[in-house]
Image 1 (cartoon, rainbow, N blue to C red):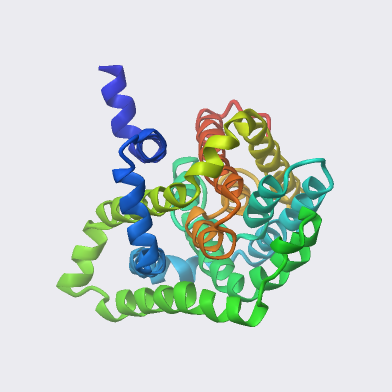
Image 2 (cartoon, one colour):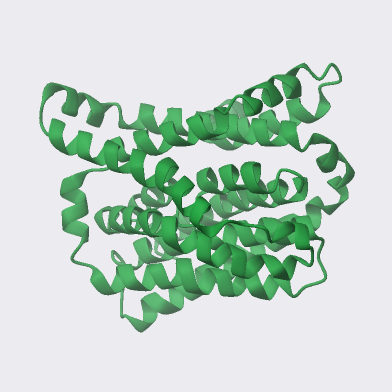
Length: 329
């Protein structure tokens, strides 16, 4: 019974692990072969477009307007996302790690905040969901410009010339088409529909749409694992180190966000959006960049997926601490 409850509540994490396991152990190579077939036909880009389109349609414009009042909190969150995070990534880049692991850390470090999990956790912890939505939209919009600048600055620390060839302009255009365009279309469509019958239906289908987005992320992970299967098998011994690095990276961002909240005198009800949105990283965009820019570095994919799982577990625990009022933060 407990296993059933766990799988129902944590189906996304369970599906991620299952997708990885099936792709890795399939001796017939049917599952990884299908993943490669989808990759070669442009499925990752199409999946990313749909995810951001649906995500834009789930955002509430009225809540966004309400969240715009928290200007200092928004700027602090953006500072954690786009300044502190790359700085921590650079610090990790100085460690004696393999190029694949470093590239995975740099991908995570350069990314904007999550599209949904951070907002949900903010609300569950009693925080300002409207502010969390504003941080999500602003950070993912700015990522179109910031990521192509930050990522090439970090990559030389990977210690391999093959890892640093990134066309900034081409990457900006690609991110604009895959992130900003569908996100904008979704937001405008939701706003135009307003309180119409279809608009109300989209509000009711919010959890279903979120589930669809999470399912599509699982598809992205499956395609990524299929393309890096041999590399992943050879680097399986690094999993413990990668989990430790992922936990340490997220802990440092949490600490930075918490100190920022303290400096701004943001107490319970206001601090949660800064802490969760400032420290969490989107898996969606990270996957498409790993698949398109660094397919040869399978360890980078492990870092990306491991970090997402680890930060969801850490923040899930933190939500409980906030809710019970026993947290020391």
